[in-house]
Length: 247
Image (cartoon, rainbow, N blue to C red; front, top):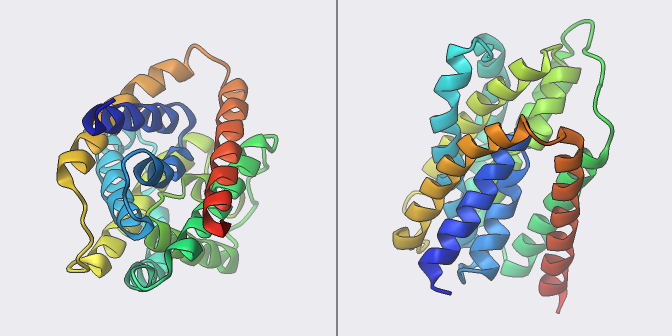
């Protein structure tokens, strides 16, 4: 199978996950880029940022039109993550490949456990500023270091710490992820990473198209079943990456 076909297929699958689940799909971008397309971990993180940014920017207007983006809350949450995203993005290129690979695996495990945990967390009665700022900074660092969107971290925090409804949290998380991704990309500018645009471009385009189909898929299949299936995929990917990091 050609590299272009692999890029299109992987992008479509990741887009489906993002559209159907509202987060978590971006965690698979780096493993796909590394193991299917031969990217180095550092280049995969940068290409992952490009893919995440394109996908979230394309999805944000639709959520905004539906009134599901809380702009002020999203801006404050994103502001806490801008500096960590920039610093982590600058540091990522200096980390050894095995460290980055192990970090990708750890984030995949966290995302899987989040998906397996029962939904329905109660909204907070008031804004917990310290927790929200800490979560925003942590999300920015993860986005900058590994090139993942982090919706699986942002959405629960926006619901639990800031009291947003689930649809508002999903829409607002897109704003947060977009800001963090752009900050991390700015830090990586001129890093010399080979993004192989002939593959990264089609990958991102397929992810955007897949996200639209994912939203339709979510209306037909139980969200709980989708989350459990995707969580098992993430755990398998994490095991593969850990084996690769420590061999």
